[in-house]
Image (tube, rainbow, N blue to C red; front, side, top):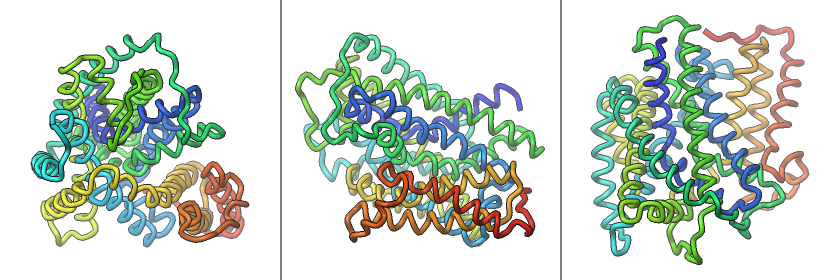
Length: 437
């Protein structure tokens, strides 16, 4: 795979990952984390960069991606998990959020006041563009990787570079009252969940594989190394942008102003862009937001539609594009905060299951493992994740959950992953080991 193609595919992957949450969450985290910023942003980068990087790479260990490799755990689990993931990062949460974030950050600054009608009109135009880009998935690499991403990167560099020069001597903002100063790394790690990138990687991995195949690469080993190179470039760009945006939120001086009903991250970015470029700042930020959200929404529509077309081949790809675009359009009109609030419990269940699956697949790729060693930890984590969300949201009193190791930091699934694997390995030691094709 040539270096030119690595850059094109890497740029495409960066743009698909860099959407709504990638813009609004880092500055918000930087603002509230205060003097604990570096620990918090480290946690955020691990879930927002490290896990997506690993997720895309693991997706290439089988020629057909996760659709094939997850069958190593169980065929029914492979379908069930992927359906839930694709619907979550697709029409139910992530795609609507791209539209609402783009509305709040690229249109509201030019309005006297936000309104349901304005959101409706904006989302109609937004999804028409996304629909047009998604109609022919074969052009995705050219339209995003070669055209939209360079414009996006230049726009981000203009904003971030100027703002850093302005805030370099500013003191760090104090930590917010709601920020967990006792576990700043965990707070940042969990905030990274909201980008949805670790589970989006499972969907995007197929697009990356297809894009690399389109360059003429067919060999399985070459596909793996091409994926590693492209995903690493995307991860490097994401990490630099996240840390920069978080640092700006950590150092910005709001002069006593505060957001009213607007999301904190969107408010901070709007303020920073205006502070850096005056009236032009709103236009520059609008360009960044629109490009980021359109590329992500397009990548998600394509990924979700291709997956459902692969499991229900009688329904054409383009029919799924229409259906998922319409669903996303309808849910987007709830507003940004409602979309984010609704997604948190769902993501808190899915993330541990998805991360555990990725880690088990990559581990069993190098260490031959019986199927039971993958199945038992997954069952334990599914049950625990559901119970943990029920307790944390006070839907029922399950105080016994608090006795679990690492429960306070929301990492209770990690000991279960290790213990479940060991138990499953011992039980299935003499049985056939899983393999990937």
